[in-house]
Image (cartoon, rainbow, N blue to C red):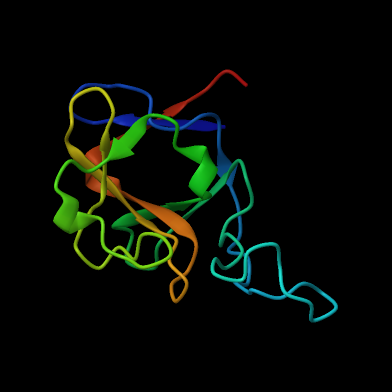
Length: 128
């Protein structure tokens, strides 16, 4: 298991995570019915898992697996209509020191994920 922490101040960003597989994003359930909120796709990662992006610059997490972050103070980074679209650059910061740490996508037309900037975090083996 791995815990990600801020590379600047070592504040914990995530809880215990294990390497996982991307989940197919869909607004529809297995029977073709709309999910609870059709404005938001299903998360790309299962809770408690992460994956490394194809170019290794991002770590993709479930949106609920980053308790150590806060919304970016610059409102121009928080674009979107139904959620955050992530097109204005990193929109999450370390809750302790305020450094840019991740981009959350949760809008009606985007994937539903948090992408940690790999260079902004350090992974530490946990005892779990």
